Image: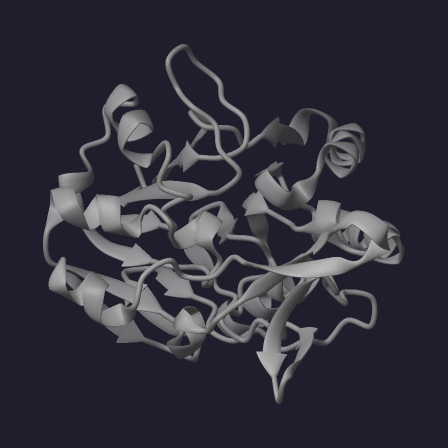
Length: 280
């Protein structure tokens, strides 16, 4: 086995007793270690890991894709059973973040959706933060993307996801949006958190940095379900140019876009629900 990736947290589930939540977490098992990529909201991580017979105490590193609560919310629960553990993240993972929610009268109000706890509190529970901005190797043939260049003209992201700057709200630029890249004998395996940097930007970055043009599998959230409609068509067209052999999406991809991807990729498509396993 080169790698095994098991989805532990996602909006939907496959299997009795498992629970879904709006969030994402995946356990990446490689021969020398286990890596936990994201932690969900904190609702289902421990329960689902137990039911899927994954001992989170065997995790040797956590990687956080970005600082939204549905990806980092389970970190405290994980630390309470694991104890001291390296946590790789971008320096801006603790930045205060908001989602603009609809309110009566057509107004939009900011709702906090960033990291639930301060750094110092997580450190008292064992988090050993390893902050990285750049493309970095974290294990044999395993990399984090670091900050992803925004090259495409159409991947603009959601204007509802904002940060406060100089007394006003501006669209969140998400410099901390990470994905993970695994080099395998079949090509690259790219695990997305929410792909706020744009899934096409991320895949181009993975190819450029690794020099490997084959992309065997893409797994995780594409954020296309929460992005402007004018982003969807060119994104779907560009995805089909990568000759991806296995596409397993979910979370923020949205039901309508997921259905379109399922139709476009046929038997190469899978729902990346809780319990989904990709093994090479």
